[in-house]
Amino acid sequence: MAKQDKETYDSYEKDVYDNPPAGPMGVHRGARSAASRAMPYVIVIIVALLAGLLFWSIYSGEINNLKMPWSSQESSTTSSAEKSKSGESKSKSQSDSASGNKTDASNADSPTDSQQNDQNADQNAGQNAEQTDNATAQQAVNTGTEVRVVNATNITGYAQSKADVLTQAGYTSVSASNPTGNVPSQTVVWYQNETDKATAENVAQTLGISNVQQSDGLVTPIVVVLLD
Image (cartoon, rainbow, N blue to C red):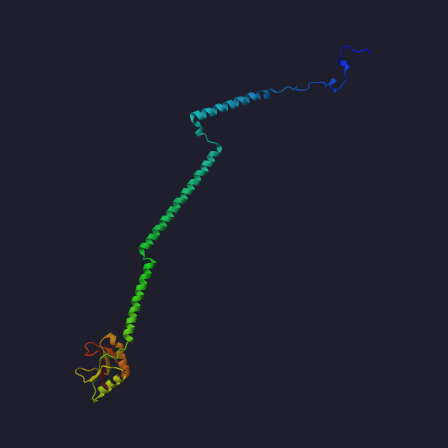
């Protein structure tokens, strides 16, 4: 068989690429609308305008005066919160001031509890001391007190017999005598000082006398006048 000198298209076996479909293929696209073709230019123009506006605002300082829609609400809320806080602080300050004034006035008008307690303690101590002194004066019987027994009856030796009764009861300074002046209307035990009251009552009890009186100008602290 003789070898062909040159290979041609027909020398190769047919495949799918030798019978392409009808119509455009590959990078070919259909026709676009006018709006889609003009959109890139519009975007470029808008971006340029915004950039120019931003540059002018920064250069002129007007950017500080620009207010965003949310900034007004935020500012209003902040202002309200500050006013509320200021009102609360003012109210609290007035309340504290009123409370302080009330406390000062109360402290100025009345003594403190400590001072009141001290005053009550001093008063009670004074009363207790006075009561103790009175009780001591009333209860202390001094058998060494000088006692004079006066016989205002017609019975001879009657005063001496009563003086002996007191001596037997423990009294150490008892004397008997006759009256030298006016005598009372009934038997009585006289005492001069309040400190002798308890002793005078004891003398009267020892002698069976119920009439005990305080009297001034006595010669002895206690005088017993016998009329019956």
